[in-house]
Amino acid sequence: MDVGTVMIRKERMVSLKKQESKQGVIAYFCMEYGLESSFKIYSGGLGILAGDHLKACKDKGLPVVGIGIKWEQGYVEQYLDKEGAVTDCYRNINCSHLEDTGTIVEVIIREEKVPVKVWKTEAYGNVPLLLLDTNISGSPHHGITKNLYGGNSEDRVAQEIVLGAGGIKALRAMGYSVNTYHFNEGHAVIAGLELIAEKMSRGVSFHDAWEETKKEIVFTTHTPVEAGNETHPISRFLYMNANQGLTIEQLIEIGGAPFNMTVAGLRLSRKVNTVAELHLETTKKMWKSVTGKAPMINITNGVHLKTWMDDGFLEQKLEKEKCLELHQKNKKNLIKLIEERTGAVFQPEKLTIGFARRMTPYKRSDLIFSDRSKIDLLLKQEKIQLVFSGKAHPMDNAGKEKMGAIYEMQKKYPNAIVFLQNYDMEIGALITRGCDVWLNNPQRPKEACGTSGMKAAMNGVLNLSILDGWWPEACQHGVNGWAIGDVITPKTEEQQDQKDAKALYEMMEKEVIPLYYENTEKWADMMLKSIETTKEAFSAERMVDEYWNKMYKPKKGRGLV
Ligand SMILES: *Cc1c(COP(=O)(O)O)cnc(C)c1O
Image 1 (cartoon, rainbow, N blue to C red):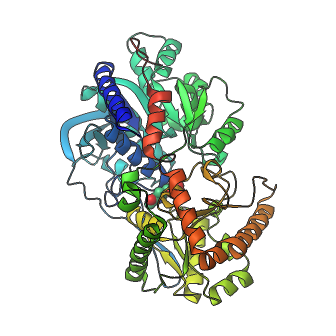
Image 2: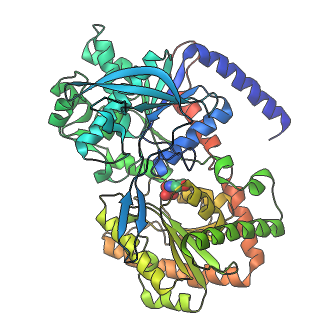
Image 3: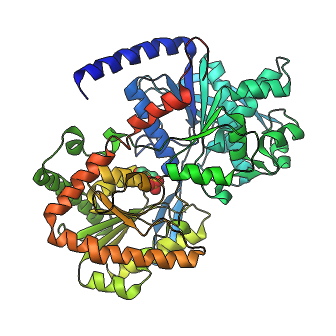
């Protein structure tokens, strides 16, 4: 970009800012935020995306305010014992950097008044983050905001009332003028019910209030698997007071019965977006029969470069030799972390393959182990070393078993296979910089987007991935990484596993391993290509530009798009 464009951009930004101060802010709602590794109000991908979104909005000077929850303990911490069994534990989060706004709002849950305290951080400059908290001394409701994604379905609804209804009330109490409410995932849709109820309390009819509310909301959906979309029996919504005074019939009109949080999001908003091109196709098919939904577009996720890219790669275009040198430094940092955390000694010269995901069966963390004779041979010949990380949801026993299976392999090959426990942003940053190859092999098409592969790609770590999520948009096979298999998906999961495992071994044996050991020159070319083709295209900066232009952008003069 030349200086002229930068100047024009700056001017445009200033004029946008002026316009915005009159037109109000974008209120971004999310259950979790991954902003700093140690501030553990996040669980995984959704939170990291939200954190990167706020950071990119800050960098661009956009008028955004984040709404989330001040989790007392946050998401589970997870350790494996000597038998490979998983232990879950919870730790209080250090929130000493948060500012007490002095604002307390009230929501109704199970017919009781629940006070909600509003905290704030201004660590992200023009993008303040408001965090809602029921942990007020003396309040019998202090436990609602204790554990992110913890508890049962009723606890979840209570948390969503705090986020949704509490979020709207907090914005009102603090005097924000809001242009657009952005619900990042369905957890926040109760805010939409609250916005309808607000208008109805001023005498507006239900349908008019809904129409007006739709103009104010945009919605991002994330789950391409039908069963992953949260639903609640209407009766639960009523006795929990999640309905915000709406009748059974009105609730059903919005979210169906049972009340589907995603369907509600589709019907409460003026525009919906998915998070990758393929995800748009899957989502359209999935919700084909839903009437009255908003138009749907795609905005592929991106990652915040300053958070996830090595400074050396970020600041300049490197020559091959420098590129390899910088990568080797990152690889040694990862190897050091592995040794500190596990005692395993990895080799800096050996091809290192990384895999870090939520541990859940469809991500198939053990696909690479499915042909034991092949993998044993590769390990015995000392061709590869493997580093894994990830957490399983505390209730996901099948996911926990996957962790146990990796652990078993680690026992057999203690200096070539390692599982880094308690995956977080710190591990995320080191592992996506320090491996040589980033492996991703979910069942297709179950990955909405996947952002860890982007982090890897822009650090010169070559993706070896199923054509799912974001990868079909970026993959130039053999140029900037590799595809495992093709876009034809067999009918049964068993057939898929077999086909994909075969393709994975073939790629490793015929392409990846020979190239790594025999043609460093070409490997470095691919690293440079990987960086060049992903750095801008999959940045959060590009992503929020798209959100601004396609989802948020207010029309001149009149309020909204
Ligand atoms: C980037 C990141 C994620 C999201 O990665 P996916 O590719 O969606 O699995 C999750 N957790 C952590 C700690 C991350 O850094």
